[in-house]
Amino acid sequence: MTQETTAKVPLLHAEQLSSTRGGRVLFDELSFQLHPGELWQVTGPNGAGKSTLLRILAGLLEPTEGRIRFNGASVHDNWQSYCQQLLFIGHKAAVKGELTALENFYWQQQLTASPNTDGWDLLEKLGLLGLEDELTGRLSAGQQRRVALTRLWANKAKLWILDEPFTSLDVQGVALLQKRFAEHLADGGCIIFTSHQSLTLSELSPKLIDLSQAAQVHSEAAYD
Ligand SMILES: Nc1ncnc2c1ncn2[C@@H]1O[C@H](COP(=O)(O)OP(=O)(O)OP(=O)(O)O)[C@@H](O)[C@H]1O
Image (cartoon, rainbow, N blue to C red; front, side, top):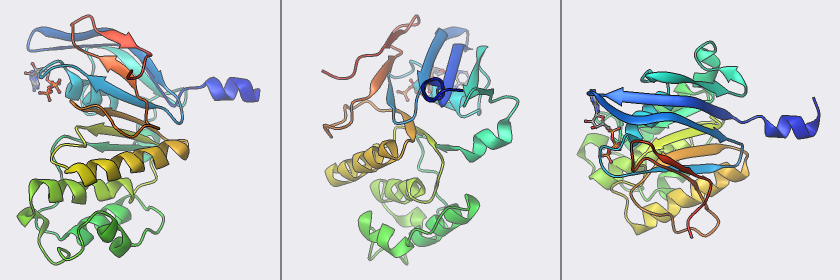
């Protein structure tokens, strides 16, 4: 295989995905390809099917039709290796409330056998120093979101699927997360996420999947 051919193999290939929920077609025959270093944003109004699409990509929900390939291989037939390359964070913070921020981080790190990241450095980076002894369940929504986002440092997955990762974050938190996005993309990772807001970091220029209409528009264009 030539280098040129290799470069064209998408990390994630969604083929002809359709989803009908509650008798309503959310999207139909949706196809797109995520290549290393690419950032994709799923947009659309409340109820358009953004979370549904991400849950399908993460293997948590079956599509009505269609299939997904990772590195050219069917996700369905290679489930275990897909899971090792995938980081999914849903729209709820999904942290363990009875653990501290540091314990949540170490738990995630062990779960994913990730390279060493210093937990204290990360707490400082995420503005959580001073709260290290507090149970995560007693932190504010934005602080809990920051604890959840420690997973982005405690994981070596290539593909990030993030549902509303900016929810509850303050301006500084949003900036920090965007910077982390840029690092991951520069490392050859790719990210697909939902958000009702536009990104502000100039180096991030997502491709858009717009689920505004049942027959959604797939746009290659980034923000203006
Ligand atoms: N378990 C379910 N059974 C049936 N329908 C569901 C189920 N979960 C969600 N839906 C429906 O699927 C549609 C899409 O929901 P989804 O959560 O994907 O939308 P969304 O675009 O992420 O919305 P939001 O911007 O509000 O987060 C909604 O109409 C919702 O009611």
